[in-house]
Image: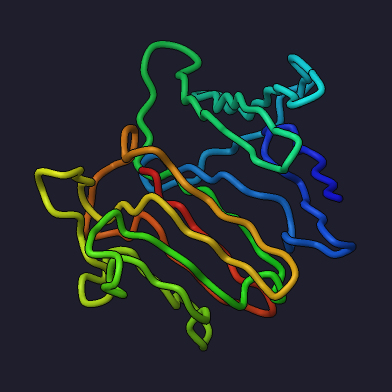
Length: 212
């Protein structure tokens, strides 16, 4: 049994499973322009239920500032699967954004183990597919731009630019959650910044998606 209340952004405010929390807090979206934080505030009336059936529920959410709106559309299926599309729109004319991150904070006992896939092959290479414990320590414990540990997909099969990887699971012995994306469309391709990283701090583990 899962309980997943949504924040005005449309993203989960918390996720409970098997009587305990998967998340340590709400999923957060942060953005910057010219190095300064954009003040994204909840839009009134959000989130909104768009459609409901026996198998799934469709919903929308929105955060906005004076310069940009972040619009969310998604659905959740009866097994807990959630699909999201996030769209940035300028409030008027054009808007410049030089940083956009999605931060997913896991409770500590829901993020002891990790399973990630770089998009590369062969699958027996642990730089392409890794299953094991989340590395110990505080701060950044996984970075998708670490080419010593993360194998880039070979060209000619499917090719992701920069440090993008399409899949990451963080879990404990009883509960956890996986994130995935079909491709790197809409992401800023860079090896300077990890597109996906895992951080540990003060009893929680964050999965951070650096989209821009």
